[in-house]
Image (cartoon, rainbow, N blue to C red; front, side):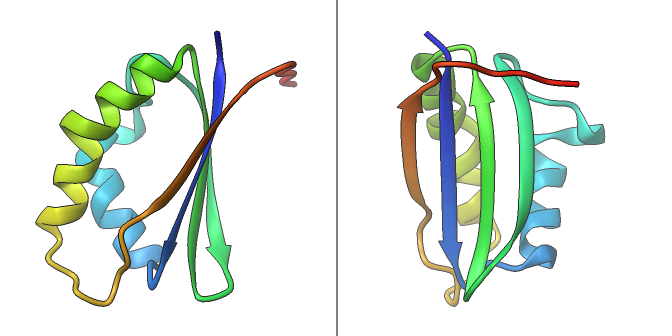
Amino acid sequence: MAVVVVNEMQGGDQGFYDEVTSVVMPGGRLPDGCKAHIAGPVDGGWRVITVWDSDEQFQQFRTETLIPAIQAQGRDDVVAPRIDSRPVYRHITA
C-alpha cells in the first residue's frame, strides 16, 4: 500500500537539504519506490513530503540511505527528523 511520508527537521535549511539530497537522490533521481518528492521551508526548519509505493520501501531507504546521509553532514544544529508515515487513499498528479 502506498504511503505519504512527512519529514520535518528543526534547524534544517535549503543548504542542508541540498547537501543531503545530492547524496540520497544523485542527479535529482527519485529513489526506487518513491513516486513524488516535495520540499520547502517551515518555521524553524525544513519539510520534505514524499509518496512511496510501500512503507517497507521507505523504511529501507530511511535506514540504509537517508539517516547515514544526514549523520554524515555533522551538523549539531539540526535536530533528528520527525517522520510521519500514513497510508495514501488517493494520489492524483497532473
